[in-house]
Image: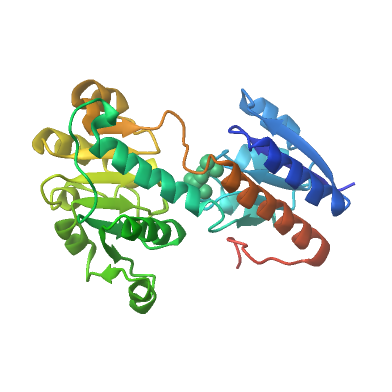
Length: 308
Ligand code: 3PG
């Protein structure tokens, strides 16, 4: 029997698991669940006899691929697939997919929530600042960036974006102003949301050169990945610019120092929370299950990220 394993350190909402089970069973497959596992051995054991795998940020590296002798497809229920060793999968002919856009609204809402939280001083009783009328720059205009722009516009913010991979017309049709370069975006906008995936080009790409361009009252929000920030630059920026604030959904390695020294200028979620809503779990989880059923039953490889 074809077996699908859901292996998630951070569990899906129950309602999403019920939906995944229905899709998997309707396809004639069996569902296995491994949630909140405490050690890699459990993952390696669970993956041994499965045909398909659904994960979130769980690391699918060579040992996992080696242990999964029957595996045909891995679906990352989410956007970023930097947790999956594509080379190891491709070498064994394993198809890798993501579910683009499915959890984007949840991530965008969290980004705006963190901006407000920081600019109201953690709701600690002191006077903060409002976002209305201020400029926000969307660094990378993908699914998440686009929704952040929509929400920000609804809040009366002036929205700018830069993304060399998205047609200017598409961005401007959303009522968002485009700027010619990333440097310009950071120079103009007091608020920046950085929505980049983690890859060779983006790793440590947010440096002091960019951050220091931000106008007075700067807040950088990172609902994306830890690796895109150059941490020595982040520390320098905090030390040099008393107005700078940073909110992130991914704990930096220098968290202890930031927490100890910068109080309400720094906030990180204790665990990656961007996609942790019932709606996002349903959207991404069910999409992952459907994509597996469609691939195994019909050979549909839409959303495959390791083609060719
Ligand atoms: C994503 O890449 O989809 C987000 O970072 C969410 O990650 P998560 O599924 O681990 O919450």
